[in-house]
Image 1: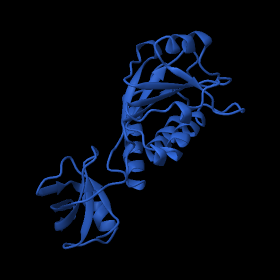
Image 2 (image 1 turned 90 degrees about the horizontal axis):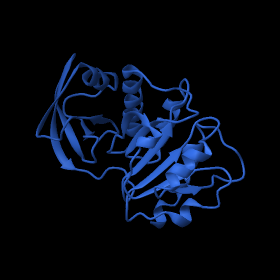
Image 3 (image 1 turned 180 degrees about the vertical axis):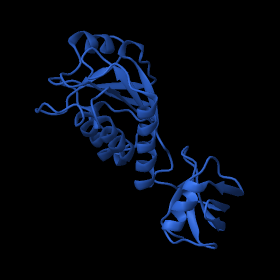
Image 4 (image 1 turned 135 degrees about the horizontal axis):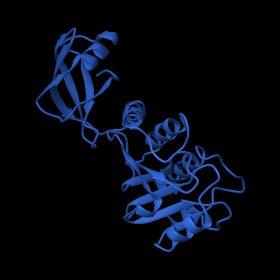
Amino acid sequence: MTDTRIRVAALTSRMELGPREARHLHVLRLKVGDVLRVFDGQGAEAGAGIAELEAGHAVLTLGEAASGAAETPFALTLAVALLKGDKLSDVVRAATELGVARVQLLVTARADAREIGAQKLLRLQRVAEEASKQSRRAVVPEVLSPILLADFQWDGQLFVAQPGSAGRIMKLLDWSVPVNVLTGPEGGLTDAEVAGLTGRGAQAVTLGPRILRAETAPVALLGAIAAGEGEA
């Protein structure tokens, strides 16, 4: 079996690939009879054989189910304030590698932007898909359209990164319920925003003694969680 992994809509006995995927197989010099891995982005993964391979078309046949990369014990959501330029792409890429199931974009008082276009949202979803392939995950995180911070709802635990907080996430984390983490924009969340979240049950946590950039904070928070997954 090659190391190649292809995302498909569903794992079925016969899977047809379009021009983009077929071209990718040609670039990799694969041929009929070779075996690769397919995954559906929802956690299912299996081996698949190349039954047909033409310039703009390919057909795969389903093989044995395979175990994908380990996922977190319960769904992990990153809620992150809108950031400028390519910073969101960097955050989505790293968050995917670190195991999130979804990324919820937020509009906060100090957010760098108030909205993003449909094309940028699609681009972020593609970043998540490519990062999922690279990190050998069988799940592709959703990247959800921005909502107001006040409208953000969550199940389970919510941890808010807030400088000066006493809470430490690894002492508070409970993998028996869904886990959500939230980070703000450059300049941080306002005191009123933090109070509003903690008043609804969120827990403020520290990221250490230093002030981190808005694109660094979510990676640091998720990295701490990923490092402790083996203890769950």
